[in-house]
Every structure is written in C-alpha cells, then in structure tokens.
Image (cartoon, rainbow, N blue to C red):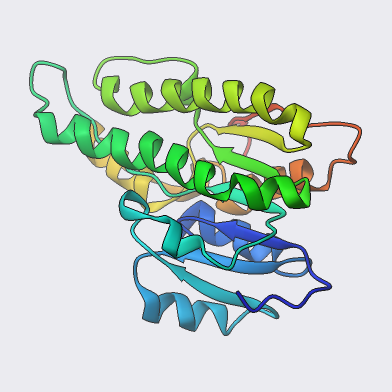
Length: 231
C-alpha cells in the first residue's frame, strides 16, 4: 500500500460504479482510497482521477490474507459490493442462493476478519451498505432480503464485539437508489424505470460521510434513508 502517511485510508468494495463509486467520490478529498473491484485496468483508470488512490483488484469471494498484506492500518472499510437475485422461492435454483450469500454476506465477513487487525490499529470504522430489505421482505425477495437480514445480524454482532477494540460499525440502509441494480429490479417487476424518481447514489455517499465524520464519542450505528417522493 502506498498511502501518504498524512491521509487516513479507506477501502471501498464495489468502488467502480453505483453507490461504491459515489462513496469514492465523496471520500476522495480526505482519504487515500483503496478501490475494490475485479477489473484492475478500470480501477487503475479510476484511481488516476483521484488525488490519492490505488486499485484493490480482487474478487471478494476469493480474498485472502495475501491480498491484504501490507495494509497495517485502515481507517475505514466500506462494504458496497453486492448482487441482486430475485425470484419466487418455488423457482429459485441453488446457485441464486449460493452466489447471493457468498457475495453479500460471506465475503463481507471474511474481508472484515482479515482486516480487523488493521482496523483495530487505526481505531477505524466498518461501514456496511445494507438496504431497506434488511428490515423487511416480500414476494420475490427472499434471497436478497435474506442476505441483507444476515448482513444486519453480522454488523450488529460485530459492533458489540469490536467496541472494546475501538472499532466503530455503521449499517446504512438505503431505500431504492438509482443504480444499475435498480434498473434490474424494475425489469424483474415489469415496470418502467425512471432514475430521477429514486435516491441518487451521491445522497447515500453523504450518509456514509456523516457516519465517517462522526466524532469519536459517538457512532452512527444504523441509518435508514428513503426516497421522499418529492423529487
């Protein structure tokens, strides 16, 4: 890792697009960024657009200790990578369940575990981008909501376990956000998609900034943000 020592370090998974990209844009002025994703060339191009950034090119399902070697201190870990699988329970194949939990839950748990020494060293923070689906489920959303319920359980437990080590844990729960995933969801629902009707990724990034900038005597433990319907 080549971070200038004066800058706090933030690792953002799913940084190349959508909410992850917006979070990278938001934190770029104050942090050295480790941009998580699978396409190294795309991440290198993105990194060149920021004052201080470098790729963290890895498939989150296959991350290992080798990938995080050299990250001795980490101020912020943002879990933004995720996948959306929709369908009725009667129709869903095993692969939909397996892939969803591997990316949305298991990879989060593993990467967090690998980076906890660095987070503890910095008295840093974990920020998980969850969803409104982390609080409720409905027809067709068993897989996706299941992963987000599990992610909420993971972050709730992590928050209590790491409190004595000085690591803060924040869970951000956006409603529908104007991203590629939202377009996929509308296609599944058979509805027309209008990006302006939903929360913009930049607004979710500002809630992450709120959590990151909270003073040490407080923690944004859980924050929900919903479309107002007034755009």
